[in-house]
Structure formats: structure tokens, C-alpha cells
Image (cartoon, rainbow, N blue to C red):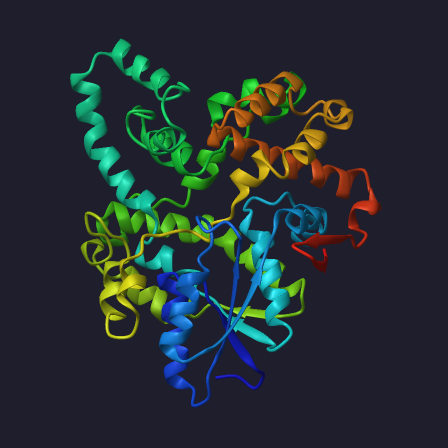
Length: 398
């Protein structure tokens, strides 16, 4: 398989567990697995990772990541990625890569499984939205649609319910652009840019359309003529590219090579020819992969819904890191850049403190955008100096 020691990043999800199980079957000696988790049980997948490692007879290694080292790492990891961090999981990926580097030279990961076997909920949700949306628009008067949209943003509705309903045709009933792109790709939709950006920047951005740039990869025909396979192709050409770049940059930051077996070109080409009905069922994605691994993985792993490398960024930014977040976003340097409207930032922070998860995600993006400015435009090298942080009595260098 390799002339250097190889391990596996194991989250306990279907993709990484499948890779680990198949690798264990090919090796005589126990394989090395590496996992990252958190003290917050709701976000930690470690129990599943431990279960899979035990089930396949693997050597198990884990690291626990806390909020202080998470925040302290951001400038350094922004430097490695060359751009603002999009996913909080970049930090987790860096720390698990650092852990793996102590024992192996290369790792296998489960990236690509969602894009070739339809693992994301958004594929099923989009099918539902596109079927129910036209009927909703036809039967419900426009004023009531607008009222429903406003109601979905009301603070009287629990945050978990708002998050789910915002991904439905009730919130974005108008077009495929809104149902799919704004719904699942955009933190700040196109129609919100005038509220977000200053007039100077808005003028420069008027000819840039992220939706059009992405949708040029959407096949108008082909892909078995099926919407799900068309969406998979679109994500393979856009979203997956960013995921692979993140993985490569975070692993190579610790001098470890990451490899993606699911993206072997023969497997990708084979999966592209499989009808969508074997990938997506009413309540489950990756149907075919689940069936294929039924004999090798624990039932609990096979039944798990997609988690997507969860990180406790919401509770951290609202509690342990709220002061650090506010200090960055309200600093005068951000206003002096004349890119983001100060009033919008204040409004976003207020909504974030009230528990609006959508606002929290927006704050996370603006935090990384500002830190990127300080690292690359301000050349503030102090941000890149090693910092000593303490996590439950243990000293870590970020």
C-alpha cells in the first residue's frame, strides 16, 4: 500500500470508518487511527471513533481540542490556508494531523464519499424543496409567503427550528438559485450584500456573481439526466475542491501527507454511472455505501446521520470566546478598511449574543476575514508567534 507508515483519520462517521475497515482488512498488523474531539459531548464524535477502532482491531489515538488553543491557532492556520478559514473543522484537522505526525508519514481520509455517494442532507432537502416549492407558491398567496418568511426569522421560534426551516422552501421559495445556492452555500446571500458591504466595495462587486460562477459547472444534461447526479457533479467541481485544499494545507502544515481513496478516478467514474435511487433514499443518503459496509461496521455507525466534522464553534463563540470575538469585530481597524459596514457588524453581534446560529456563522466568517487582513495586509507578525495556552492543566503550543 505504501513505503512509509500510513494511518487513518477516523471520525466515527460512515466514510472514514469504511476506509479504516477496508484498510484493516488489507493489513496483517493493527492499523493506526487518529481522532479529534471536544469536552462538549454534543459535538464530539469520539465515542463512535473508539467503537469503530475497537471493532476493527485498530490502534486508537485521540486529541481533545479546547476553545483557547482553537482561537490561538486561527492566525497561524489562516497563514497556512492563504485565505480566511471557512470551516472551523480546519483547526480540528490541523490538530489531528499534528497528532498523526508523531506515528505515521501519511494518512488516508474519507473525503469525497459524500460527493460521489450523496451523503449530504442538502441533496434530499433540495429534492423536497423543488417538489413542494412550486405547489406552495401556487396555493399560498404571496403576502402569506412573505409573512411566513419573516416569521421564520422571529426570535420566538427556537434556534434549532429556525436553522432547519431556513433550509426549506418556506424560507427560499423563489428559484433554484435561492433553494440550492443561497440555502446551502451562502452565509450572506446576494440580496444581503448591500447591507453587508460598504458602498465603495459594492460598486466594485457589481459584476461578480458567485452563483453564476459556480453554476457554470452545473450540467444542463447528462449525469444520467438526474438532478441528484447533477448536484453531485456540481459539488465535485466546486465544494469538494475547497475541502481538498483545506485538507492538504492543514495536513502539510504538520508535514504529513493525506490521501483520498474515495476519489480514485475509477471509483468516481463508476459512482457517476450509478442511478441516483441507489444513492439517496427518503431518509438516508449514501444508501449504496451503507449496504456495502453492512457486514463490516457496527450497526450504530451504519445508522448514524451525517454530522460533517462538527465543532462546538457556536457555544464557544457565545461563551468562552465571546470577549475575544467582540474585541476583533469591534476593533477600529475593521472599520478603517471600509469594506464591512460597522452597523451591520453590530447588528450581527447582537443577534449572535441572543443565540441566532445564522448570526454566529456570520460572525465566524467576519472574524476570519479580519484576522486574514491583519496577517496578510497589515503584516502583523505578532499574530504568527507561538503562543502558550492552557487547557485543563495541560500546556499546548498553538
